[in-house]
Amino acid sequence: MTNSKKTPVTSLCSHTLTSLHYRDANLVDDLMGQKTFTEVMLMQILGRQPRGVDMRITDAVLIVLMEHGLTPSAITTRLIYMSAPENLQGAVAAGLLAVGSSFVGTMENCSELLDQIAAAQDPEAEAMKIALDHKQLKKPVPGFGHHLHKPVDPRAYKLLELGRIEPELSGAKIRALEQLSAAVDAAAGRAITINATGAVAALLGEIGVATRVMRGFAVISRAAGLVAHIVEEQANPSGRFIWDTIEHAIPYDDTANRTKTV
Image (cartoon, rainbow, N blue to C red):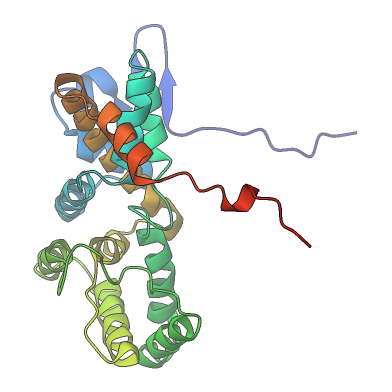
């Protein structure tokens, strides 16, 4: 009886007693001192030699996603670091758990919609259907709206500006985002800003990053920002202040504990 299970393999890294390779590149001879972190990261993730445009777009995206002040991810990291200062990596990991479908990682949700629009026979009709479906469900369209940046999210429009000037990009995902933006505005009856993760979805799509991988770029970027928050926490602790503020801002209410009379 033969074993039908295929033996798994890896193409990411190999090593001998005297060398280490990232894919087919020798780490010491070909990469160290020769390539940037962004270039090697893209080589590993995309499985190809990145172009100049790939690195320019990725650098812009990583800078945009790195920081946004005391957001849930940063607050979580600071609180966990306060609780376990010997475990820096645990505090960063805790903060990264907040990268998801509500904050920081919404480019994946938006990219799914852009894929639908770009593949549709009538992209504008598909965009309008998406906008109206979300309106009927009273759900925000991923990649649109921001509670802090109004009337526009300046990060998004700068990213799109950078994408439009790159002649090597097809522009298909940027057009899909623009079509979705027009539909979102029409359905809402007012202008709704494209937010940073909406623009990130379009630009990462333009350089060939698969939708289900995009959130990984947010994880990579935000990890750097969270390390910076820990550095600041070490010099000027805020964890106890955050804890005390919440303790006083949210009062105890025993209404649910009172015995109800029949």
